[in-house]
Length: 139
Length: 139
Length: 139
Image (tube, rainbow over all chains, first blue to last red):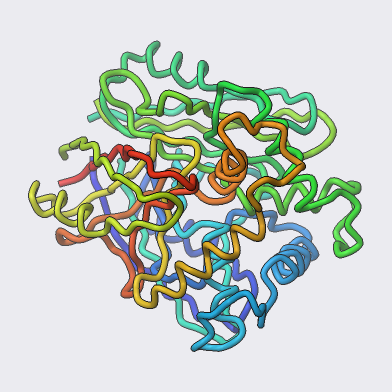
């Protein structure tokens, strides 16, 4: 049984979903991991990790539209507005989704379903550099 | 230290919560796992895994009612409607909940609380066959 | 490779976020864990585990305000009201957030970001005693 760590840095272009399934698979392949458990942890409080459909881009557009309506920028409910109108909505979106994922790896591949992709969801309107800690334990 | 994999297939009857705590416990017992970490990963983007109260069925009814109001079928906000009125609301419900769970196992049992049950939450209105990847690492 | 278990008990003062990052770090230090995976599992269905900003307390106030508006106490939509007006909203908040977290540990510290704290989120209005199962696997 072995374990390994890696940090992935993703530059976002502002609010939206960035797929990084390839980067995850490449790390597994490069290290010849066969069977085990992969954990991803996003080290931020205004972005999320999400597993979602990777076929029709309209799904990403609609997810964004839904969350924009649910937690609108500039909502007068919020008092934490130091970093702008999108600051607190970003924290709310993070609370409503997830910052860590646990995905079993079998036969050298994450056991994702046919339509599942792994995404970084940037919730701030401006571009950010986001760090994802990756951990593998297994064989 | 050992690890093991299993795939659980659950046939849903359309939208609603299906408890499968028993199947999880049976897999642990059958394999004589004592102490370790259990990971469940649902391989779909329009259903979720949820840990919730398993006593009063009204809780499930109310959860369903809340999510139906929060992400109503046929919402004109959505453009991804190829598979029907319930397609995009199902993706939204999945984003708002979870597709993987991590539960420690101690003394041969998952460390669930007295009222916690493990559920598959089907978000589509029609019945589906859903696959859950199970992974155990420990002793 | 070793593993270890611990149960943390936190007394809440009613609805609100209670940070316990220190307790997590102390458990790791006391046991001299260096590299591995930490899993936290909350054994309740009306509270959550949340990773959120630990700098400005206004963020916690605003998160609370948002969830109060999203799932208001006494909502006539709900029929499961045996334990009071806040009973079903607490289950809804739990479903919308998480009861387990997976955090890699490297060099003796959880790989949390600069602004990330680990919180227990009490969703009931009255004080409760909440139990969190902790599991570590690694070296």
